[in-house]
Length: 252
Image (cartoon, rainbow, N blue to C red; front, side, top):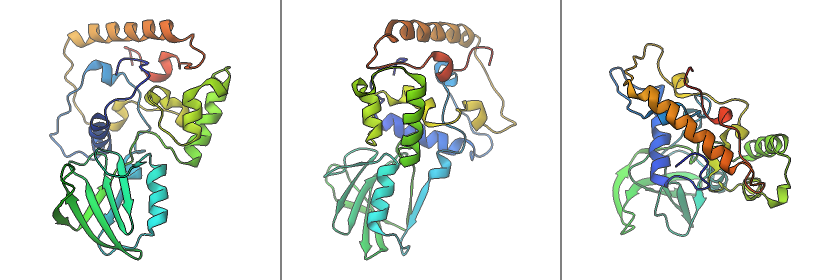
């Protein structure tokens, strides 16, 4: 999205991004990461936040279904009647359908009491099972926490940051109810004590190849950020965080 857009990227993009961030600090040697300078200057969740919230499920394991449902909601998954895209789950009796972030396909998990009896992949279009699996891995649905502690931190920092009528701020109201409001990505600093950048995710011996035009591109992009901030900052219903809280500068 463009800086300070009040809508979020498509779920498939968020999914791929989460998978990348989760795997960066575990990547095998001789791996290559390509990215534009506009992505490199963007601050991200603290290193280890996403990988630290990966949840693994295997057949034969014990898992209380109502507790697991609550955990998914806290991880920003959305409960729907039929799973169609990343970040959704549906519950029908003892069967849980879920499309994990970072996964190429959704899964159907069948329970017997609190035991995981079977795990199968299924087709989104036909809703028919495809392949039997022994285990699956679930990433959080967002790059920030929507559990009670995360919401509490957000509310507190929002009130400290902005002197506005909170009842007229949709994003404050949404997050207070555990909803990932459109454009929430530009409020990421309010969920954490600090943010990292992509350099913090990479192995210490990483090598960098920076095309010369990237330096000019960095300056142009950060100028664009400043202009969009200045043109939108006076909307009291959608108050904005200053660019230095969301982006690192060119020298950094």
